Image (cartoon, rainbow, N blue to C red):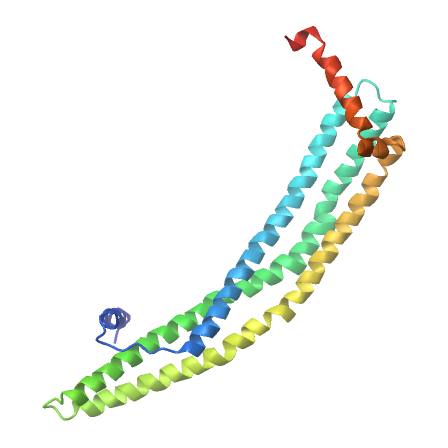
Amino acid sequence: MSFAGEAASRAGTTLMQKTGQVERTIDREFAEEEGRFKTMEKETNNLQKEAKTYLDSMRAMASAQSRIAETIALFYSADRTSDGAMAGHSYKSAVDELDAGVGRELDAPYRATVLEPIGKLNSYYPTINAAIQKREHKMMDYDAARAKVKKLVEKPSDDTTKLPRAQAEHDEARDIFNILNDQLITELPLLVDLRVPYLDPSFEAMIRCQMRFADEGYEKLSGVQRYFADNIRDEYANGTLDTQVEGVLEEMRELSIYGP
């Protein structure tokens, strides 16, 4: 039978199953394993998407830091010797190095150890889904063949060769379906259980990449702190710094260009 003929035949079987004319095979064990696989497929596809979003976000953050540093450096361009100017210059140097470090310390290692392994796992799903679909098709062929035999048994044909031929078609369809069904029931849970040992190294690598990048960021930005007074953090915590900021804002509001 041609592909188009098989498709038409299965479409007819589906319709008859909906109307109750053909009994549908129910396999709860397979349904359970397929459900676990579909959950794994959904979650690992989401994992790939979110892992890529993380890398894109880190790039965007590093680029934004560089743009902020450029603006701060412009604020202090008139007085290059003040502590604020020195801090601004130091900050710009630090974030520029961090921006370049995204590619060196994070981008390439993260792609190789996290994104690529997850992507490779997800690339297997179309093949597995094709096997599941093939099982579905063979199950429909089996259901149709079983219904045909049942009909000939209940209402024998004048042609005595029809029932043996139908029985042979039934047995062949049953055997093909059982082979595919047994294979999937056996291998789907193995695949699902292997997801943890497969993803473990990528999870560890992700943490190491993040930690290395964070450590480098901490080290470089810590160098900027020497330009600030030691009591800045305490003033921020006790609200003194807020009072200072409000005082500057009040001076701005007193300017005639501020308006009524």
